[in-house]
Each structure stands twice: as structure tokens, then as C-alpha cells.
Image 1 (cartoon, rainbow, N blue to C red):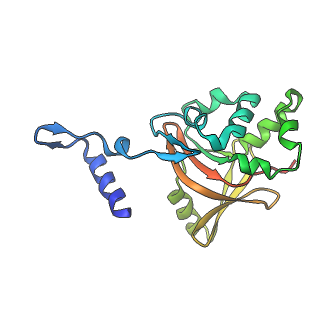
Image 2 (image 1 turned 120 degrees about the vertical axis):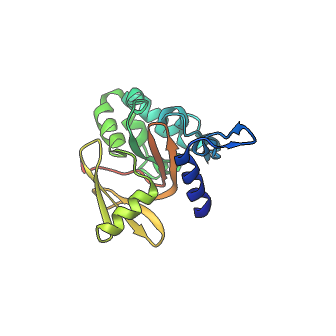
Image 3 (image 1 turned 90 degrees about the vertical axis):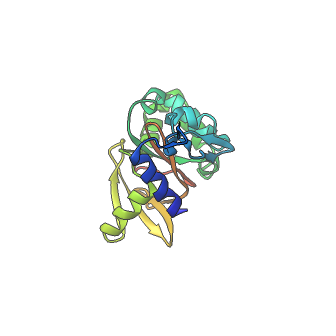
Length: 192
């Protein structure tokens, strides 16, 4: 698989090639989309346009809508989003999600959601390279203004929140037109 990625990258850099007079499609756009929550995630669509199709992210989508963050996440970015699944939200204490979705809790909900977003486009490989270069951890500042830390657990990428809770990246590098999504198995919580 790494050899295929290298070849695709080389072809993409060279631009469209011609075989028998026919131009090939840019390989980066021709790659099969990653499937998340039973739906293909297309690299030419934005974070919201893809997320709404994932059956595993209906809670996250509802929360983003309730917080009024749809237009932000449809913006140019780029953004790196650590996207908790429905099962991740289910791990929270009973009533937490329902409480956060109440209109009077919009600021708290926005704080939690923007704690899952880092400015820029950081692929899994980018994160692993920075973890190695920084002696085993890589600290990031989220859009909420609070820190999260990336580190490795064996060959798995883990994101640590301010309360020392960890979220395992279960699907990395879901490329978007305005960033990248990494699916995580727990909700990250800022210090409140």
C-alpha cells in the first residue's frame, strides 16, 4: 500500500498523463473514498457534506447544527477534526448530550465541539512525525483555545484531552476539501 501511495503521489505531481492519447484523471481524485458509518467520504466535499452521510456521526452532526457551527465547518479551513462517533457520545454520563443540546447550553456545546477541531490539515502521518520529533508527544491548540496532545500507543494514534482522557483514532485520514477528519472513539473534554 505505501508503494501505491508513492506512485499515486508521483503521478499527481507530474499532472495528467496521456496513454494512447487519453488523459488520465488526477489519481488523488480517482482514489476510492474512505467509508465511514456506511457512507463514502469524498475528498472533494467539505467536512459537513460528508459527515451528514455517516450513520456513525448523527449525534455529532446534531450537535454541530445545535451549536450553529455548520457554516464554519463548511468554510475554507483547513481544519483537522477529531470526530467522535455516536458510541463515543454514548460513553458520556446519562443526560449529558441531551443537556448540551438545550439552547441555553449553546456556549458549552460550542466549547466542547471546537475542542475537537485544530486549525490546519494534519494527516495521521503528520501527527506521527511530529510526535516522534517532539520526543513522544505533540501538543496542539484547538479552535476552542485549549490544548490537546497526540501520542502513540503502540502503532495507534491517541488524542489526550485536558482531563487526561484519551480518544483512540479508529479511522485516520478521511480527507475533505477543507481539511481532514480522524474518527475517534471518545469525546474529548476541555477543562471546564
